[in-house]
Structure formats: C-alpha cells, structure tokens
Image 1: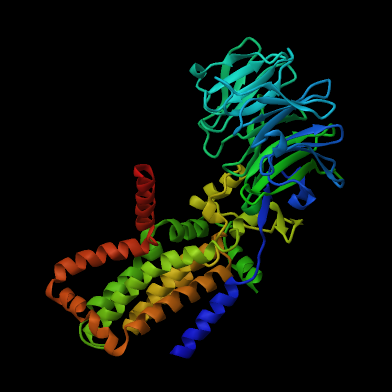
Image 2: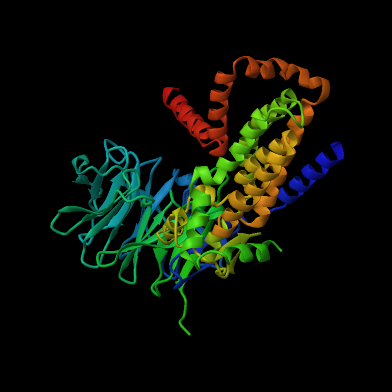
Length: 294
Length: 260
C-alpha cells in the first residue's frame, strides 16, 4: 500500500511541477493582434498612464515614481522622478507647447514638465487636489483633474488657479481617467462606482455605461472614432461608441491581468500598460494593432 | 493523447440538442451529477449482512467523508500554482506569455454546447467576462472529490463502489470534458489527488489506530436517526463540492475584515 501511495503522490507532484505560461490574452475581437512591446527590463517599473508623444510613449511609471519617455527599441529616458518628489504618478496630458502635465494620487496636485525638462507645480495640493487622478487638457486650455478624496473634477487654469468643474453632487466617486472626443464632449472613467460618464458641451451629465456586470473603467483613449477603455478589475479592454455601445476587445489574464493605461498612435495602434506587480516594480507594455486583411 | 481524448469527447456535443441536453443535465443538475454516487454511499452504509462487517464499512465511509474536507483546500492550493485555462476558452484566438515572450496561439477547434449553463459561459467570454476559476483548472477539484468519494465507497463495498466509480468517471467527469470545462489531464490529476488523500487518511486510521474512531461509529448505531440526518447534510455538501462551506468561509473572512 505504501508503494502505491508513493507512486500516486509522485505522479501528482510531477504533473504539478514545472513553470507553465504566465498569462493568456484572449482576443474577443479577432481583427486585432497583440504583441509585447517591452517589459520592465527596458527601464520602467510598473507603468500606469500612457500618452503617445513625438513617436514614442510618455509613461507615468507608478511603480518607479517617475515620468519616463520611451521609443520602443530605444533607451528609456526619465523626465522626472523621486528626486522631484514624485510618488505615484497617475495620468498625463501634453499641451501644444510641449508641456507635460501630470497628476499624482499619493502626492496630489498637478505638476508640469516644461520643454527644458524643469518640473514645477502648476497647482500644488492644498484644500483640494490632495489625491489627483485622471487628467485631461480641455479645448479652453484648462487642465481638468479628478480628485478621489473630494469626489470632484477641478479645472486648473494656466496660472494655477483651481476651481470646481464637477462637484461631488454629480456622484462621481473616483475620476480615474478622462478623454475629450472630437466634438469636445468629455468622457470620465469612474472605477469606484464602475460608471462611464459623459459630460456634453452643454454641461449635462450622462451615464452611457452604468451598472454593467464585468465593467470597471480604468483608462480612456480615442482611436478610429471609438473610445477604448481598459478595465483593471476585470482584465479587459473594451471599445465604446454611442452607435455600437460597449463591446469587449480582449481579455487579459494572469501576469497581464492588471491592465492600466492606454494610448493610441496616429496609425490607430493601441498601447496598453500592465502592472504585473506594483510592489516589485514589474510591468509590461503591449501593442494591439489591426490585422491586415489578405 | 490529452488533446486527442478531449477532441473525441468534445466531438460528442454541439451536434444534437438531445445529447447536449443530457450532458447539460449531468453538468448542472445535482441529482444527476452526484445523486447516484451518494445513493451508493448510503447503500454501502446501510447494507445489512454480507461483505465487510458493518462497523468497518462505516469507519471507512466516515474517513472518506473526512478526506473530502482535506481535498477542498489542497485542490485549491495546487490549482492556483499555475495558469491552466478551461478548454472552452482556448476556442478563442489567444496569446500566451511564457519566458518573457508573447506568442500567438491559434483558436482551437471546439464544439459549443447548445443547451445548459455552458452556453452562458461561452457567451460571457464574448462579452469579455472570464471567471477567475476558469483560469486555474488543474487539477480538477470535481475529479478529486468524486473519485475520492467513489473509491471510498469501493473500499467499503465493492459492488456499490464499482457503480459509483463508473458513474463518476462516465457521467460526472466525462461530461465536464465533453463540455470543455476540463482537459482529460485535469481529470486524471484530480483523480490521483483524490485517491492519494483518501488512501493517506484511510492509512492513518488503519489497524489499531482505527480504535479512536470506535466511539464515533458506535454513536451512529446508538442514534441512527440523528446519524442519518447528519449523513444527509454531509453528503449534500460533498455532492456540491463543499461550495456552502467555501461560501461560509468567504463570508466569515469578509466579516472579520469588516470588524477588525
């Protein structure tokens, strides 16, 4: 009996051993193909927001407390880091003059990296902006910034004056990411209430996607006339348009499940950042591009 | 061989509404999935004269139930060691990350059932919803549970055990492979795990060491009504692969978090 028992256990342990796949990405929309652009060995830690800028990616490296710039295949450049007081850079926007604005959900406030790579406060944390989240450049030139603690969206003028743009009465829990469409309507991802909000140009608040099972919007970007939405809680990339509604593009699992930021290049390729481990400073950037039709 | 056996069984579904409905019944209906195995357990428990002495049979069967409580956490711990998606997920085009490389994995030919809960699970994938337990399926906890239970019945009463083993393999577990919930290898590993745990527990209380169970076995003879009632609850929970217990532990854990 002992021999039989040893054999059974040995077989089971042998079958459970070995290193298997670390992640699967299931393509629900078969018109896309996925590729790994790079991992932390490139020089970033655990990336959050991404912005396409001058042929490369601006990376809000939350795990490395830095804002970085990377042209895939080249070296990663650090534009601002812990030395400038960065803690958890969250979201970014770039204006026409090349100034990079970014939020920081631990340090709060809004900071600016100018063309000479000087990092300064645009609006330091004070009575508001204590935990700054999503950030977007409005057509008016103001910077819209979400605040998790105040449940508000502030509008920060170029001189640094911050005023409430959307107050807590709107019910937005955590304005994690924001994006303007071509008509100037603002989409807001709330990953606390799991709602995608739309604020039209006339100031009216809508909830185009709310109360949907398996939907918790994280980051937003526009590409090919549709809004692409990462969902870190469910490991999903969604697409939304007012005409077609919400649909899934891909499901990320395992090491790649924690999808965070998203950006699109001028050709419509999507770049998705993944935080595999924020504590260990490990992450990836993937590119999803349309497959060529034969 | 694993894939060939899977495709052979999966080839049975997706063609006929009747076959799919019967397979769905084996997957979704507790009575069909586990009822006959539990009936065999009760047959072995209450069988009068013949075969092993009744006291020995009851000791083996009580230890079998006890082993099921060990299998639940062990199976969960082992399955969480690495990623092993259910076969129906591999019916989608996918990419696999291994050793720092993301490689394409073409969609696997897969027959989707036209009846039962499986239709909803496949539709969920189309909407981007994948349940976390659909990604860690090796070894199969169903196989570990039902092979252990059937083997325990076999140790107590060969005739009832043979029926229970046959039902577990063909109906309970075969339907899970046919539907795309498990690879044959998941089932084989789960079965090995269940058998190993059962044999360890039985071995631990074999011979003289079994004396410690005498009072418990004696109690089932003195209070047959209460023993039957408790046996019913234990079998119901076993048939449900300890889901109530798992849920109770989740609630307890959440409650402790909230209070602390």
